[in-house]
Image (cartoon, rainbow, N blue to C red; front, top):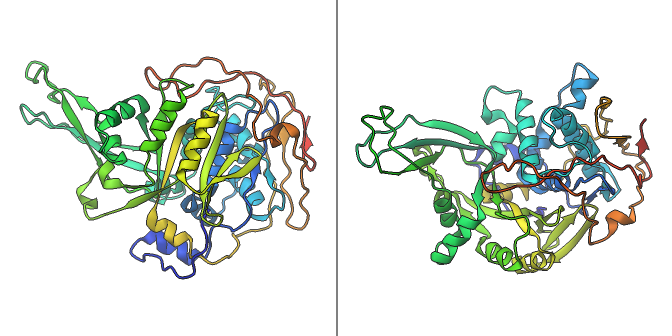
Length: 451
């Protein structure tokens, strides 16, 4: 969370900073809220994504500014990630309860990815993949003419131009443009490099460990150079406002020593130009990024950590439980060591954007009166026996749900046993998936079960 800083002035050179300052909003200075994860729901992977999007100032503020839109049918509205997130944002902004239901986004992803058998209600999925799916779905709702007007690409977009130049013949390939939301790195390669070259900064270690090599780009095999590998030149064409680093582990249960050695490599601030080669159009852009938080995983369960400048402490978000960890990064490292939690995604936010968000005045978002999100019925083939849908609260009267014992404990119950799935990256597994049906139990007060 960002604290208000009345003495700061935003850097007017950046248009996004000006837009946020003009909007007149800041990070809400309210107690942090948890998210519901009843027994059998396996919402933890999605809860950490929701908490991340909310606590990343740049995304939250721009999402509040995103203009409303209407749907031509209830079915279309039930598949809209923007409307599902907006419904959850209503609880963050206006609800007096400290426990928020994530079910609107849970069901929306269920419907959107039903044919792919991903993010189905009751199953445990990968948090990084869920984040990517949410951002990609928001991109598809883009009402502008380019990625620059898309909130997902504007905040998280990593736009790259890649080409290969042969060191023997000088032949160069045509540049290929790619766009993604998460930069992945193999932890085993990163740790091996850190052991060999312990004096290198974190962003340099990332750059070397993600370096790719290819052969001669000459298409004619008779002419192409042999026995040579050339480094792939990757030039960053757009500076994101949030850099998401996905950490791919060779095992789902690394040792405490491996977790500690990895977290100790992580730096609180990085320079993006040390991680990526900048496109000539960005040569004069010096952009420091500050570590804002991370998603961690252990034993079929996720939690998230974010630094709160109001409390001057790191907080852990473990479904319904939100509590202080300590004021230093060493406190976070120690908690991860004790709980065997290893980092899955790191979030770095632009320093100038943080400065802007902390001086914005406290003006409530548009349309403060919440509206219920209309969701379509699940088809008979779905694995859900009875889906739980929340009713959006009114500003005047918001019921306080009873926190079930199963989600209020500091140590969560084990999630459903996942089944083995095809690894996303060769030799590595980002997460395993569960296909067990969801068990509806411990329904909080103020919510209903629809037949």
